[in-house]
Length: 240
Length: 220
Image (cartoon, rainbow over all chains, first blue to last red; front, top):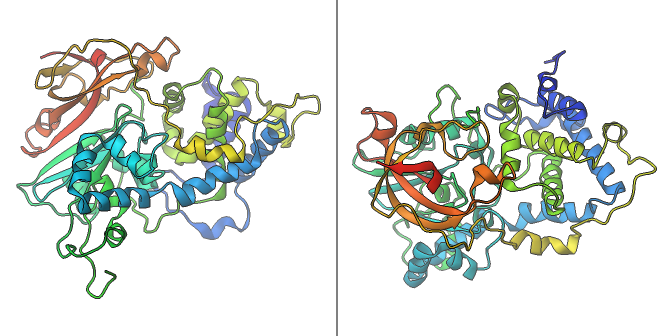
């Protein structure tokens, strides 16, 4: 794994510590695209972990960063801003036809009705999936994703594998996620090239007619709101 | 720029690795890098989201592909802080601020975080700019190959599609990333058939929608 030369140094834009940090960071981990996160190795902190710690200490000592603020940001995206928000939006749309109509015409405002708003969700569009129409969201150029409703994107969404293939082989991608679409179904792929952020309103599964909005929200998966999954009907004997 | 980040339609990137019950951050340092980036961004200065994206695109392709997502973010963050003179190489190595360095006030305190998370900073602009195209109109994505930042992916250049929605006026990333002004203009959702993009082996029913600025389009 050791690499004697770091090639970053050749580039004018990365200099000094940035280059060595980059090279060391690169060595300490496998590629993002093929990465299997192996958490058994963390008894010894990785080099990148130490370097991040060093940077944080320097910025705290200089007064650029408040450590408690960092903790609060991490906590917000680990526990508050995540796909449960989107699931509540979906459940509301399933339960309330008037809300669904607002959601499909002005998604940003309808989502804000439930209190979800903020960075990377300023201009939302919701796409409705049905038996013959399947919408799928990707960002081929980077990692654009609707944070307020889905949280931060999973590794696979940011991976080269997904970004490269979603636009050219959506049916193959869906098959890998376990979604087999009939030949006569239409797929619309949405490449998030601008500042519009997309969320899919998945099809409501059969057998959920009597379920409460809360119970419906429990069924909704993150993948179904990106368009790589369908919402499964409730398990027999499951919660109402 | 025609960088490796522009991945739409590439082959050979392997199977998609879907992880069950994936955590938001796989290691604590990833969360710290994310949070540090948000705080530094809130500190202002000569930066914007488009330029920030461009910094990632400028990474040498072998590094871009080898690094994990937050390793790229970390590299970008260090680069920016060094470039702006916020930290020095010696400080990064020692893990301590130089003894003579001035003491700043953090732009974000813990009690400001909830408001920061829900704050909107839309790229939408209230500028009186007329649209150059109408919904239903056939358009061609221009064949441009700028060496700077652009949000027009290679796989769509030169292809013909139909405007399905006018999203309104937004700042233009190509100029904004280079600090050359916002150049506000209309953004449209443009529908390209899968066959137009990928040839006749593609499904006749499928399509890809891209959001495109006026400057990316010409009459077809």
